[in-house]
Image (cartoon, rainbow, N blue to C red; front, side, top):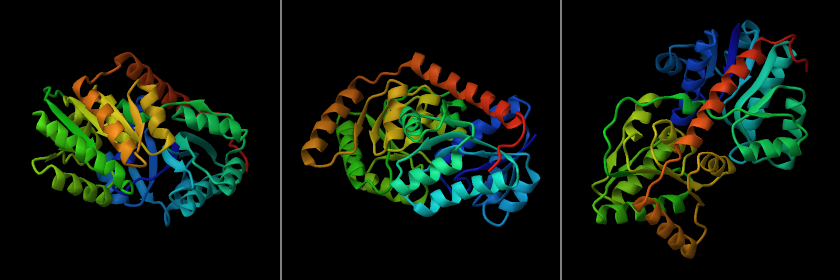
Length: 339
C-alpha cells in the first residue's frame, strides 16, 4: 500500500511533527511502510522521520499519482479562522486526489472553526469520505454538517518518554497571537518562583512561539528553556515536571503522553476538547483583568495540587491506536472514493 500524507509538515511546528511521528510508527506496526509525506521542507521531514517526502506544492501531483491512497491529516487543517488560503489548499489536495481516482481518508483532524463559506466547502469536499476526527467538538460540528465521522484521537499520544526523574518544576507553553495567555503564564511563573518551584518553558510553534518564550524569560529571568527539537525528546523533557500549563494543544498532548499532569489555557475548542478527554483542568484565555485574576488563582490551586488521570489518558491513547488501525483498514478498502 502506497500512501501519500497531507498535513502541516516541515514547517517547524513541533505539535504537527509529533502527531506525524506517532502516526508513522503505528502505521509501520500495521505493516504500512511505503509512505510519502507532503512537506514544506522535504529534506527536514526525511531527516526527522526517516520517511519519503516531496514538496507540498511542486511535488503534489506526482505524489498523488504514485500513491494508492491519500491520508489528509492529522492536525487542525480544516478551519478558516487563521487562513482561508490554508483551507482551500487542504481541500484542494483532497479534491485532486479524488479526481485522480485515489482513495482518501480524513484522519486525526480537528474540524473548525469554519465560516459559512468554509462549512459549505468542507461539506462538499468531504461528503462520502471516511472521516476520523480527534475531539468531541469536531465530531459535533461534523454532525451539524451532515458528515459521518468517528473519534480517533491524536496520534502524538502514542509517543513515549525515556526515563525521567521527577522534578519540582512548572513548564509554561505559550502560543503566539494570544498575549493575554502569555501574560497569565508569566504571572503564574513569578508565583511559582516565589514558592520555590522551578520555572521552565517550551516553544512548540516555531519562531513566533520562541518570541513568546522570550517574553516569559523577561518576566521570570531564571526561567529554563526546554530546547528539545524533536517530538520524542520533548515528551521526555516534559516528563517528570510537577505540572505543564499550556496554551498549545500539543503541549497538553505530549505532557499526557509522558504521564505528566497538565492544565490548559484554551483558545480553541480542540484544546478544551483534549483537556476534557484526559480529565485535565482548563480555562479560556482571559478576556479582561478580572478574568485574569480569577484564572491565576485557579491555576495556583492546580499548581499546589497537580493531578493526573491515568485511566482517562490510557483510554485516549487506546483510541489513538485503534484509530490508526482503522486508518490502515480504510486505506486498503475497496475501490477509490469517487469525486
